[in-house]
Length: 147
Image 1: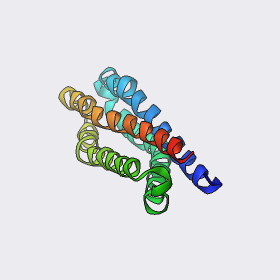
Image 2 (image 1 turned 60 degrees about the vertical axis):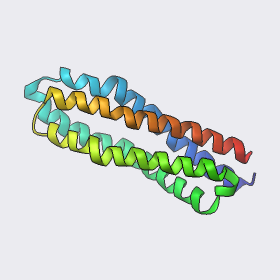
Image 3 (image 1 turned 120 degrees about the vertical axis):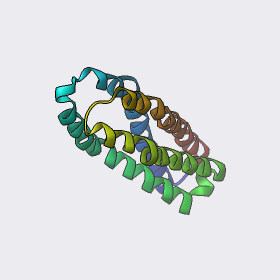
Image 4 (image 1 turned 60 degrees about the horizontal axis):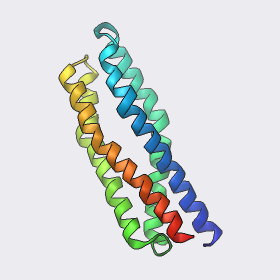
């Protein structure tokens, strides 16, 4: 494997691994703790959560997405066509889930804590948790195939 392929696949793996770790933390710790914030503080907490989370996930998601597209465009043979396509499908799944399920739940929670919405957020977030976990495996496999 040449150094460009190695670097790109390593960057892709690092960004995906960061998202895997983050989504598991969010799923098992962060989202379930929403119910303990308290009604009086929740609106401010949710606003801070949304703003600060963007600083963490934004760069990792951007690097992951750009790397995935570059791999699909120019390095799919080295990474494996099937793995490249699987990675793109999983990436689309987590982004569609984010836009259609998690963002609307956060918008609803921005006006105040709602236990049913918070529980729905935790349940629906399993889609992203599973998707990013699978992407982590795909990213490892891509690097392995290219070696």
